[in-house]
Image 1 (tube, rainbow over the protein chains, first blue to last red):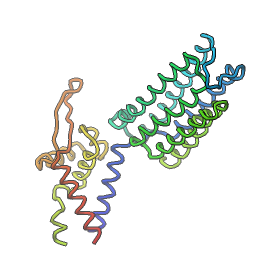
Image 2 (cartoon, rainbow over the protein chains, first blue to last red):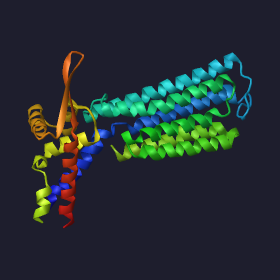
Image 3 (cartoon, one colour):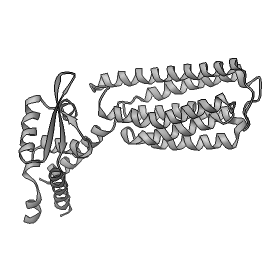
Image 4 (tube, each protein chain N blue to C red):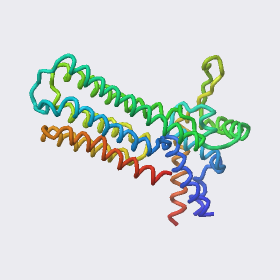
Length: 203
Length: 97
């Protein structure tokens, strides 16, 4: 009799988790987005940051051509990253026989999009005004906030990932001349590490 | 001991009904297909348990049309939520003994 109730409680907890958390998020999508981020930062370094010292607190004079180049790299990285995350997650939902479009994922995306769009628009405005140096820091911080905001809709690990990204973002502001290195560390290394942890834990 | 059993709710004796309530405790406006997917049960089975929970007034439903297809959304009522909490408390009390 007692076992039945223990089972009941366990199942209730499991159902509540399953129905509010999107656990088909693939760890591999973390790994792939991390690798794409590293490629993006490498290209940005080769084409811009190597030539001139943009990693300062002041606004720098950037040619229109320079801005459009940088935007192109950022946009390319973003699109590739989203596409790869979508690909691996879709594959996993197929394996688990779960639909990709349900209330949980809608809420997950909604909670991600608000801080991300806010941060994205702010960074765009700062870029157009020449404040390039603080962008690595701000993108990390807003990404971290977005992760924390959506962590209740997916793996609990996403919360600590968000916290780390925020800390790395703050460090990137303090030590602004190493901004790109922190950026590569946060979006590349940390992201890949977490992807592997999630992949191993929730296979 | 008898008191504790008295607090257990007959409506939740069944696993599927317990599962339906668990989903509706933490989600709003859940449609039939989502319930089916989460609980991994057949249409007929789910429908009959939903009906019995409706009868006890533990859940409510709203019918609407989504792209011309009928779609039913379920919610837990306040009395349903209270009954569920009471049931869980009773189980916890029982397990403490």
